[in-house]
Every structure is written in structure tokens, then in C-alpha cells.
Amino acid sequence: MLIFFWFQPRNGWPWWVTYSEIARLGMQKNVAGQKVTLLAIDTSTNQPKTGDAANITAYVNKDDGGVTVLGDTSATEDDATNAAGLYTFDLTQSETNANKLAFSGKSSTANVKIVPQILQTVPANFALTEVSSAGEVTATTREVLNATTIATLASQLVWTLTAGSADDKAYNGCRVVIRDSSTAVQKATGVCLQYTGASKTMRLAFDPGVFTMAVGDYVEVIADAIHPEVHCDLSVKSTEGLVAQLMVWVTVAGRLVPVASLDASASCSVVVSEHDSGATLFTAAGVAGDLHSSRFEYEQASPGFTDDRQYSAVASVTLNSQTFSTTHNNIVIG
Image (cartoon, rainbow, N blue to C red; front, side, top):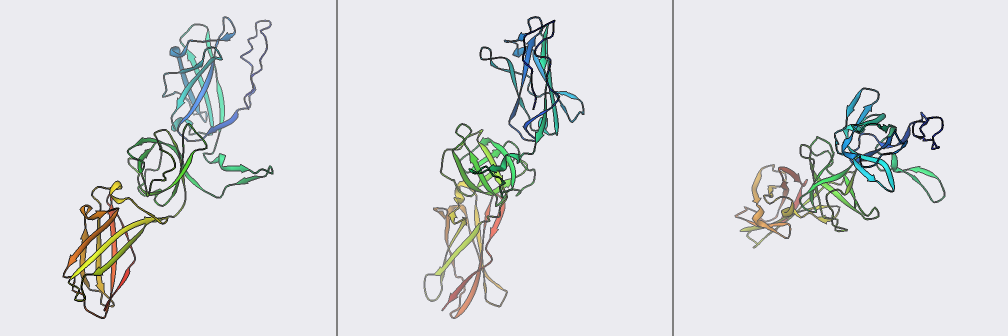
């Protein structure tokens, strides 16, 4: 804890100089979206300095590795009346990536000094410990892979993260908890269907539909393995099997994936082979134009079925260059 001793000036000693050497906890390590607040003092009056935001430059020293200027060069004055002398700076994720953070500053205004902040960071998942109503401290069983915010939002299904893995598919199948930035109790849960590392783009398997998500909302990616299931129905129009009718769709956690909303060029394929032969009887391809209510519905002429046979149908759906497949579906003709 960083403690300031507040007392009236005596014998020339300013009240703002003396503070304990115990660095306080509170900032999360290597997490974006955090801020630091510094106190500015006018040494000619020994009072907080107001109206000095444009003249203050802030710095950080990470793990005693050297002092560097903060990326935020425009301080925000908290409140000249009710929080006199306090100026806040936004921090990038990299500016918090250390165990010890020493924030300092200077003002180009004469006789103005900035009181430093020395912080010891906590792990990003530190807040996942819980205190029960009986006062017992327990740790949650979930593993948070990433805690960040929504950077840009294309729809309620597709958005980019402020911070995230550089690896494609890193969060595929993970549970995603979204919290409204202005109403902490407003939360929604979804499943990540696809993640692109280069752009930090996340595509949800379905819209949670709880509240309207927006840029700046908080996101937690929780380790899980909720993978999509591809389904296929196949039937014939006549006993001779002259035309095969196919329907292919994708679900995640029992909910239909809105394929067209995720990829306007989505496609599917069904490979049919006769039982125990290993030879492909036909391959039927479906395109985005075959989508009806997020299901591919189309036909295959002259499939070549024979009565009293069992066939295997393996369906796959391609979304944004990633393919999801079934293991098999059995078809009996007879």
C-alpha cells in the first residue's frame, strides 16, 4: 500500500513529499485498458496544481529497467474542484507488463512537481478468487485465457479484440463471457467458433441475444472445448434413387450456427461411398445460394444408389477458409 502522510506545512516541509516505501497492489500485469493517476503539486504554495494537464509528461520504469515516456501524452485532469491536482493517463498493455511499475512525471510549469506512483502488479486472473457469503476464499475452476475488450465491432457475431493471441484458432471452442462496459451486472455468454490471430477477429457461433454488445465491452475467453457439429440429412425422391436430396447444417452447444451471417461465401460438401467398398459414389457440393435458414438444401442428380445397400455420407462445411466435418452419417437404401 502506498501511504501519503497528510499534514500542514511546518518548518518548510511540504506535506506531499513523505510517503511509505511500500508499493501498493492493484494493477494487473500485461493487461490493456488500465490507467494511472498522478498528483501534481505547486511547490510555491504546497497545494495541488490544477489546470496543468497540457504541461505534464508521464513516464514508467518497468522492473527498474529504465525510464521511458508513456504513450499517452495527453493527461486528463480528473476534477479541478473535487480532485484537485490529480491527472490520469491511459496505459497500453506493454506499459503494464512488469512486476514492478514506477510511474513518474514532470511538468513544464515552474515550481510544479509530480508525485510518483510505485505499483506491484498482480496476475491478470488474480480477481478470479472468490469470497463466499460465509467468508471463505475459494478459487474458481475456470481458466481465463484472455481478458480484454472489444476493439471494433462488425456485428453481434463478429468483432476484434483489443488484445489477444497471434495464433489462428487459439480460442476456437472456448467459452466467451461479455460484460457491458457501463453496467457491470449485464453479462452474456457465447462460444468462439473461429479466431484469426493476425487481426484478432473473433466470430461467435451464435448471438447470445442478452444485450447489444458494443466497442469497449469487456471480454473474457475461458478455456473449453465446445466444438461445432456438422449434420447431414439425405433422402431420395423415388425408389429408383434418381435424385438425392441433401440438407447440411452446423450446430454448437445445440444451437444452429447462422452460417450466412458469418460467411457470405460459405460452402459445403457431402462425400457418399458404399459400405465397405471405400470407393466414392459421388460428391455433392453446396454453395451459399443453397442456404435456407442457415441450412444448405440442394439436390444431386443420378446419385447411382442401389437397393438394399448401406452408404456412408461425410459432410463438411467451409466458413472463412476453415472446414468443419462430420465423422460419418449412415444411409440405407432399400
